[in-house]
Image (cartoon, rainbow, N blue to C red; front, top):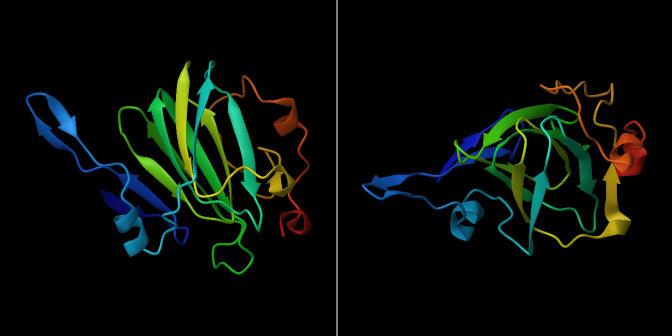
Length: 180
């Protein structure tokens, strides 16, 4: 695997190294040792799939706060997404900065999202599937979110919004107090 750093501290695009032959290719997408060696959380306790029918669907912006803050490894296994994350670690040099990464079934890339980051995505194709590996179990009492179009961050979503859940649509704007 190749770990490509981003402008946000401890955030990596993880690209599998492909070993190709006449059958196709083989690639490792997860290795506890390689994540640990880079100081990344290697604890995986839950995996989730999100299936999205329509291009332009938005899910986010979500995170879990302490004591159930979670790291995520996110891959698009069918279709394509624009994956956006925001650094909400108040002690971070990149606090309140965000990045967006295109993850597709064809590019096989994943995004490592550390604890303390809000996460969301927009589908770029119909019938898109997203696979998450999580470091913590879902804890509803620690779940938080803010509006996908919050003016604090000005995330540049690439598509018109076609579908967004009522919960995500009704999130309040970001305030630091709600995320500590």
